[in-house]
Image (cartoon, rainbow, N blue to C red):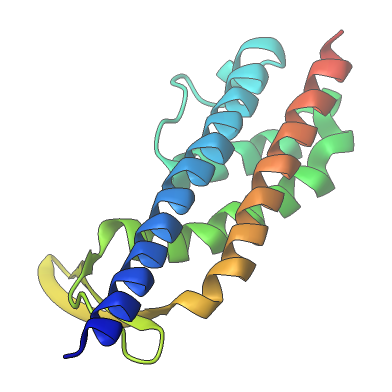
Length: 164
């Protein structure tokens, strides 16, 4: 491999690492805002009557919030916006989980794509699944993650306004 090829691979790998880091940071911001939404509803809108314990895992948060939007009259104006946000979280969590819980299985790209391996548990057995993450997918994914965070903040602010 020539120095030029090594430099190209290093640049691609740096781009991959930056993309993964961005996904981690941006997801953290979005999910932390979702936690705030859960807390507001749980503490201020009677959500503690729907579930006795505040949900911690994403799937439980989504399920809980859907129940709340359906059952709590004071937040019924947020139902459509809230459910759209939860749909975004569900959709983006799949790609996020693949990348964050997967492992890079090659340190060189194949036409801008990196191979990952992910262990899934299916019927109590571990299965290794391979997939590619194409660097050219990142701009759209980053845009979607920023939008997710922004929409979460808007919903949190809407709930705070209702509660005043």
